[in-house]
Structures are given as C-alpha cells and as structure tokens.
Length: 132
Image (cartoon, rainbow, N blue to C red; front, top):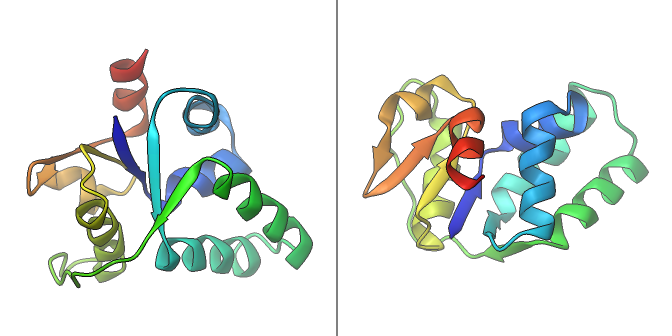
C-alpha cells in the first residue's frame, strides 16, 4: 500500500505519540510504502524548530529516522486546490507524484475532501483501523 503522511502526522508522532506514533512504527516495520517530498521535509523541519523549539541536531536525527522508511519523490505537478489552506497542496502534490492510494492527515481541510483524484484521505484513527 502506497501512502503519504501529512506533516501533522510526523509532528504529532514526535511530540504527542499515541496513534500517530503507532502509524510511524507500522510504516517503519510494516509493508507500507511511504512517500515524502522535499517540501514536506522542509515543513517538518520548520515546525519542529519554530513551534516546538527543537535544535538542529534533534531535527536532523528525526528526519534521518523518517528517511529510513520514506521514499523521497520529485513533485512534477503543482496543485493549487485548497484555497482555505494552500500549504496543504504540497501533500496532494506528493500523493499525485507517488501514485499513492491514501493520504493520512489530521488536517480538517484535507479530511473534508475525503478523496482527491481517487486518493482516499483518512484521519489517523481510521487509517490505523484500515491497516490493522
């Protein structure tokens, strides 16, 4: 199964744990193919540094751990779809570029879509139910 995890999944896994941390563990050790773009990586780094005051070493280690199980894709199509939150377009772009079946997100703008170009969008709890 090919998936894209929204930035908020990585951040929640790092800061809060619980369901999002469980999803990352399954991604690391399971049979899921996880895709990420450079823009998503940059957003993770920026949020960890600016919002949660992580230092550069903490961020580097976290990103290195993610890249052990994520495939970095080049985005070839720019999406301008989410007028309420255009920052979320990078998640759609990554999912299109990697031909994913699912996007996992806790973001209300993405969840509200339910799907985009035949890519299902699920919240973390529903995705966990699906893969267990």
